[in-house]
Length: 402
Ligand SMILES: CC(=O)SCCNC(=O)CCNC(=O)[C@H](O)C(C)(C)COP(=O)(O)OP(=O)(O)OC[C@H]1O[C@@H](n2cnc3c(N)ncnc32)[C@H](O)[C@@H]1OP(=O)(O)O
Figure 1 (cartoon, rainbow, N blue to C red):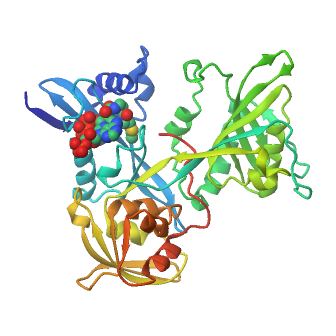
Figure 2 (cartoon, helix red, strand yellow; figure 1 turned 90 degrees about the vertical axis):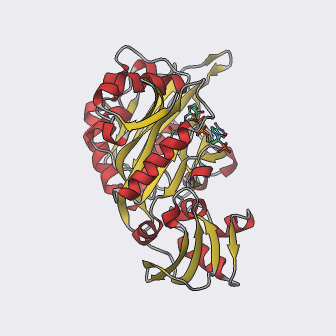
C-alpha cells in the first residue's frame, strides 16, 4: 500500500504518542497524550501513514538556542521521532527528515535544526553533525576542593519546588544568552522538565531543590545501605550559577550531603569541577554525543553566529539532502561579525554540511574533522584559520534532553 505523509492535528496526538512511546520501547500511560499536549506542535509534526495507519513520524519544538557570541536564535528542536517495528528500513524516517528540512527551507523558518539522537549512527546521513558532547561525571563524596577555592558564606538551602522555580527561571534566563547550546524554556518546558512524576524517577527520590542567592541545583538521591555504611548516589539534574563562587558553593553543598557515596552528573564537557578539586583524578569522566546540529540554511546560519578570529575564505559545501545549500560560499568574518555570499571563485576548503553543523556551536574543531577526512583543505593554512575562527569561548552544552 502506498505511503502518505501529512502534518498532524491535535486529534492525532494520542495515536502519535503511543507510536513514539512504543518506538522507544516504553508504555504509554492512560494520560500519555494529555501529558504532552502543551509540548505538541501539530502543524510542525509529520506523520507517515499506510492507509489510515500511522506508522512513523517526528516533531519539532519551536525554541531558541544560544549560538557562539551572539545569544539566542531560533532552532527547530527535533523530537519524538519513531517508526513502528515492521515498517522500519523502508525509508519512513527519510521521508520525515525530508519533510522537516525542506519545510524549514520552503517556509523560511529556522536556519538551524538540532536534536539528541537515540543512536549516534542515525542522523549523519541527513546532514547532522555532532556539535556538542556531554560528560558523564562521577565524584566521590567529600572530595576536597583545591586550596584557595572560594565558596563565600551565602546561604545554600534546600527549598520547596514552588520556592525554587521562579529563582531557577531567573538564573537560567540571566545565563542563557552567554551559554552556547542552552535552549529557551517557555512555561511548558519548565513544567515538563521538572514535572517530577513518580514514573519518571527510575527508582530514585523526588527532586530536591537547592537555592543559593546566585544559583541553584536540582538533584535526586538513590539510597544504598551497605554493610560498611551508606553509599547512596546523588544524581544532579542541573546546576546553574551566576558566579564561579556560587557554582563552587553549590557543588560543595552537593558533595557534602551525608549518607552519599558518590555524586553523578551528566554535565557540560568543560564543567570546571575537575579544576576545582584538589585531586582532579577523583572526577571520573566519560564523554558522549549530545546535540547533533543541522544547518537547514547554510547562508543564514553562518551569518547568525559570531567568530573568534577574522577569516575570508571560500567554502565548497556539499549537501545532497538539502541541495539549496550546496555550492560555494565566501565566509567573511571581521571583528566577530560575518557575512556570507554565494560566489563562483575557487574554494579554499571543501566540506560537507554535516561538518559545518558539527563545528557550528564552536565545540567540534574543523581541524579535527579534517583529520577525520570530513574536511579537505585546498589552500594551505585555510583549515587552521577556519577552525580557529569557529571555536567558541566554552564547550557547547545542552542541559536538557528534548
Ligand atoms: C530525535 C529523536 O527523536 S531520536 C529517536 C529516533 N527513534 C528511535 O530510535 C526509536 C527506534 N527506532 C526507530 O523508530 C527507527 O528505527 C528509526 C526512526 C531510527 C529509523 O526509521 P526507518 O524508517 O527505519 O529509517 P529509514 O528506513 O528512513 O532509514 C534511512 C537510512 O538510515 C539507516 N538507519 C535507520 N535507522 C538506523 C539505526 N538505528 N542505526 C543505523 N542506521 C540506521 C537505514 O539503514 C537507512 O540507510 P540507507 O539509506 O543506507 O539505506
